[in-house]
Length: 212
Image (cartoon, rainbow, N blue to C red; front, side, top):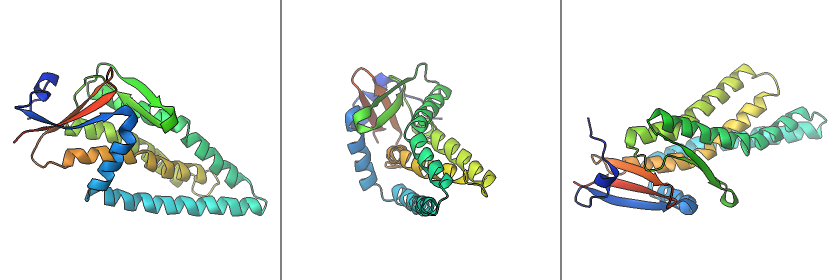
């Protein structure tokens, strides 16, 4: 079993190499860099997202057509699902990240955001995450929300409320893109331990890899 390093260990240049320093207000740019550089995980996720996006466009268009013909319930539910996704779902997504952080042992979790960039986050100051714990924190919202929406789609398949769960699933998959992109860092250096932690005072995240 790998020994979890301390902050001092990670900042020892003889043991670990600082791979990346990410400022909170530059997180979107950093995520885009990971998307462009990964050739294994991101392409698969892009196929998944594209299929969901096309499905969402189909049902959104169908809701508009039905409204044009006088049946407005599908469009109202679709618009409601978009509003829900851009408000309450954002909070739910980050709360699930926070819950996962607590479950991995974080003593204190803080929530924040940069509203003008539509960037939101849950962080545990100076709490170190390795590969397994990071994957757990990153994928908790994805697994829980997508499973709930799948249940909703199956349960309400023959009623208009199907549109709510389907559109929420589509939008939430886009929310998870950043989590997936950051997760690829932990697969970039096979055989080398990778760790990260947030520094709340500096508003930065640090990524380290163990030296060979």
